[in-house]
Amino acid sequence: MSITICFDFGNTRKKAAIFHDAEIKEAVVIPDDSVETIRSLIDRFNPAKSILSSVINHNPAIEDLLASRTKFHKLNHHTRVSFTTPVGKPETIGADRLALCAAAVHYYPAKNNLVIGLGTCITYNFINKYHEFVGGGISPGLEMRLKALNYYTAKLPLIKADSNLPLIGYDTATNILSGVVLGMAKEMDGFIEAYREKFRNFNVLLTGGDIVYLASHLKNKIFADPDLIFKGLYAISEVNNP
Image (cartoon, rainbow, N blue to C red; front, side, top):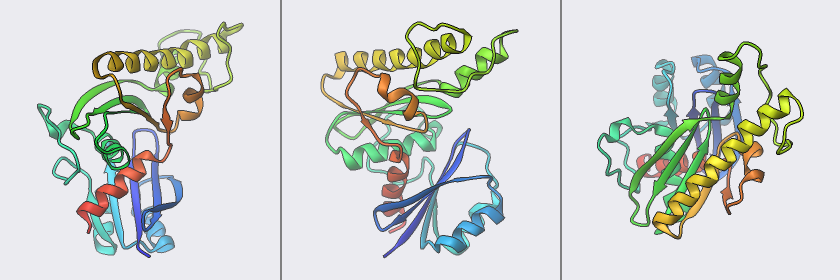
């Protein structure tokens, strides 16, 4: 049995998943990117391989630690992937989006796939049946929208996200939840319909921490998988860390 630890450092959370061969066994939220925190994970799980996807300015010392204790790969635009990126500046593609595309191609090969990542931002990532990542879109995520209403107004409170909400709000909190959560769901359904007009048949893959708030409000058929980015990272690790 080979153990691989996959790190996903996003703008809001830092997470890690532990794979035993190709099976994910555990996912944990990491409090920080200190050497001590990463070393404790290595000591606990004793991984043979590791991979890091980071969209933040993380502590560079952890890369040296991972390289010294495991067979390490840092995901970037030089990484070998199972799809092409025919865009103007491939070096500007976020590591998280590369991992999502890798997962789509790995689990749904030779199909058109629209991967929607629900993180700090919503990312729309379209990979066609020829395994080309042709691009997509980026818009503000759930927490960003809730915080913006509070920050840019004098009296609107900061509301906690919730999936249980009415269509017609009856107080300030439910008005905000209706506008933000249902507004996001309508936005996503609108994008899905626009892609369908252009590409006809494709899979819609939904992932990210805010699945619990959005999935039940979408009218389109989706494949919801909160661990999709980790599965993509594992697939990339197997190619780059054979």
